[in-house]
Figure (cartoon, rainbow, N blue to C red):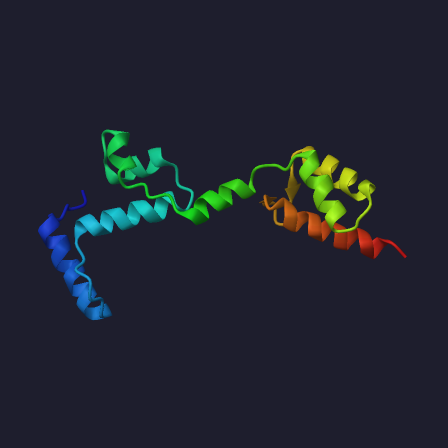
Length: 140
């Protein structure tokens, strides 16, 4: 069985670490738990899992820890698939033929794009730009 230290003991350890690292802010278990929860939630760990990790019985308690960052919202919005109109307008703005847009969109619609390492690519504009570059290399 792993011994469980008191909040007092953890606060003493955190104070020592702050002194060693030159951190001016007072560190304590409350701040450490909030920092841990914030890091986990903003790096893709589901709220339910973080709730269990923190030992909360009620998920509403964990929701108080959830500070959603703009970058997280932006990352999730990048994953929203584009409409045909968005794709056709983008390719037209790049002065590319509609056939490029149609081929790109049909491939994207079939389930997205997978990188060589097996990761689903979410940023469709970056992907479209690469597709345009690739197609222009095939043309003599």
